Length: 381
Image (cartoon, rainbow, N blue to C red):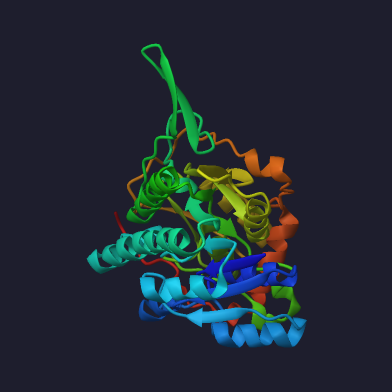
């Protein structure tokens, strides 16, 4: 298939591009290096450096003999984006091209403005480019489980049937975001649902939980093909951050009571879920929603797992509760449904001790690159 990957330089975008290219799809990658720029400007660069996108693609061809097309540019520039759609005529567009950090979105006004404008305008531009150039194209958008918040009822997969005064109807599941970033993802979903109804588009919205992991089969082909691995409070996801903290001898920072429970998945499963959505597309006029997680854990449970494996590897690992910098429930009910992708064939990579040992091993190889001042930035909201 002809697959356009927007945000293809990022933590998830680059491994997805390699996986799809390796399987024989025609892959076109677009990025404007926003994450690289933000990390540099805020002094939170990843654990190890990675080549730029043009170099990565040259290395990929050198190792595999497979080619990818690439353009460096901003998806918020409509003329730039629509020219790519005209040239490539994608059958699928995978939308990773958003500012992905909740803490960054709450950092200050400029961060809030950038998050709002980048995330909503990129989504709007994709919708219009599909409608104008390739109306049959399937849009796969990475949403977030954070859209739902932590309601005191079971979380369904995107939709809920409600009976009210003797009548029934089907609605998007009520959502209550805990950051501006998550709020933009709700607005993405609303934009897509409006245009699905109006223009008969076909869209899959993947409500993804926090991702962990460093390696996929393709990143293991050569160290230069590694993906971004942030370990800071702004861009590092909690499992990745805890493992780096354990290796560095930095206490695992548990916010408040540590009962915050979320759904998680391995980076390999992110790619598998996107592929399953691509190979089993939504129907025209359908906004299909999957909850893209494989397991649920509290922060305390994650810290305990990381500590146990860290101790096995000879690290001195301390868990330290700190005042919660976020406005959130620290103890709550959490029971999301996540059966749709398994029904399509997902075989999850669960968070075993073996998986954590593998992550520790790679972080240990790069331990000299850990800078403790980058870990905890005390962003409050």
